[in-house]
Length: 119
Image: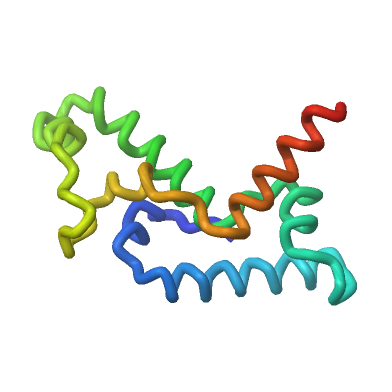
């Protein structure tokens, strides 16, 4: 599942992102005809499919990398800002880059790291 405009989802509630992850997990399971006991992190690793959280973070990073060198001065200015304190209620798009990964993403990344060291 790809979220074409994923930087927009940076303002989505964690519950909404979790629901999207559940849908992605169901599609992975249906596409591979995986048994119920196969963990989602194994499916993501074997399919080389990023979790919603990882995909969103990567897409946001690409967006800000491109925006930083864009000819439009307003877009470049959006890249350079001081993030608000963590207690601030308004989340900005760039906060996604500093958010810690969710549990599934962390598990998939650690499993991928272990496999890379054994190859």
